[in-house]
Length: 315
Ligand code: UDP
Ligand code: MG
Image (cartoon, rainbow, N blue to C red):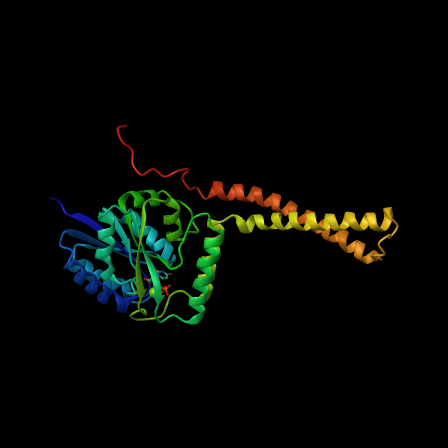
């Protein structure tokens, strides 16, 4: 019987010192996985160190190693996308090159997959060697995401995950530019399971994600997974107009219809302020309406498929 093929996609950006240790760790893991063939797809995301050379030396020694090189740095999400597109395995695993995603977990991912899971997500319970800013930021990201996103994401979900071939095929049909691999995979659906792990500190080098870059990624992720921020102005406008309207009407009757019967002595400038707030509310509502049109453009241009099919039979 033909062995099943597992593709492993590894985005590499200035990881020269990590390539060989990672390869060694993967070989170790494979010594227990003799029932499967592997395909290691290293995607060099425009490194300016010797990462490319390191991978190419592996290509010469091992026909299971494949290499893709970008013309410049496009970012991890694009590198992962390219790797998944190039993969041919029955399952595809995404793995960071810095050994923060322990390869020892791969057999467990495969076991879950063999038992029927189509997406097996690595859930990070701890991130060693991360500063307070990054941990705080990551906490904030997952919680905002959970609150506003239309697709679910648990705290600690990483890109370290296995996807079945059907999921990879569906993923390849997604065409948006601003992308976060894990939220797109979540959007696709399919049967999901979780495996927890503690991330060790990266083996060599520095993180490639500055706070700045991460914030930008988080913001894009929010706006591409949620339309709530866009609609917010409209909701705010409705609330402001509603309450200032009530206050305005009350003050109008008290002051001009009943001739200040309650002795509120509402000053002229206070009345002006009420009218002002009311008008601001109307402006915000108008923005909200514009937002609805933008929302429409946003969904149309993201070019996502209307639905995702797992299987077709008997056509
Ligand atoms: N990476 C990439 N392109 C980039 C930045 C990072 O391909 O522009 C790769 C990097 O080589 C690593 C993975 O993405 O394999 C995760 O990056 P990093 O460890 O710096 O992120 P962190 O773990 O700190 O979030
Ligand atoms: Mg890392």
